Length: 254
Image (cartoon, rainbow, N blue to C red; front, top):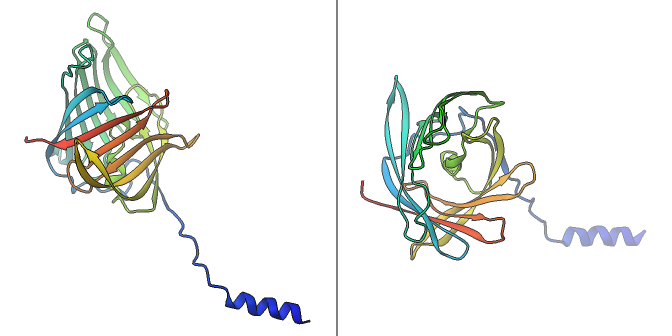
């Protein structure tokens, strides 16, 4: 049988293909040892939001301070809305969020708006308690919710891959939660390669991370992240009309 021998020799002469790299998938829960945000530094930064036509529609300042709460190391984020000339009717909010410094576990959430809306919550694992006032003349409502699983704060989802180390090729699956939700939602973060983006007219090298819904795999946002402050420098969010909302973040003096 000559043909099989020839085929075998030909096969030996073919270049050996390297095995395809497998993504390193990490399933994270609140309190997971795979996260360590203790390297985060106090800082302040300004965030600007642009709609699909490139018009600025929102702006706020983020300030991070570190502290102690009953012997527990915590990070405290203060977010202060700023007026924007092109969108004068936008509600201005002031937001206080407290997270565990190492695990990013949400501990406290207080939001107030110039519209009269007010929310004050204590988060203890799956237990969420506090008060909510939907409007300036509305009665105060008690909040007492038991989540299916503790979740990281959805409005700060970009912090999760940073605390995990931003290792290229890593896939993170993590639960997220927001104060208007009664259960957590799983999101998938895919850490991609470094790339250069324009941030307020200046080139910035950062690591791209795609955030997707786990259920339908739809893209929620693309983040451009650093392992140093301000940690998130640029983001893109696909909108339902087919356009893309952009956001930038630049350091400001404290």
